[in-house]
Image (cartoon, rainbow, N blue to C red; front, side, top):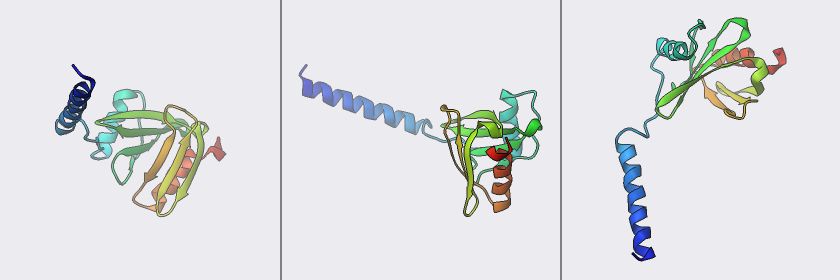
Length: 137
């Protein structure tokens, strides 16, 4: 088989695979439906923890929950699933609040560098900032 024909077959195969994954829901991003859903996701990974109130981001892709000992539980969507973390202010490299109600976080952990999290109001963003601020570590 000639090289140009092989390249065409490979390109078509890749395109069909990507299309199949997309149309079967593989490119769908998971979201957190409500506070109780966030608690259930978190509880599945950390059954001994009892999170308090839940602060969902506007896009419903992340949830922040205060825990005992000044720690914070985080649930974040990743593709069609979720990952959970428990962090303390010592795990935070930088955190700041931007307008209107966005918390920008950079973690010390190289496996999750952080991100920008938009909340419904400035009070919620300020509360998340205060919980994660490295100054209190």
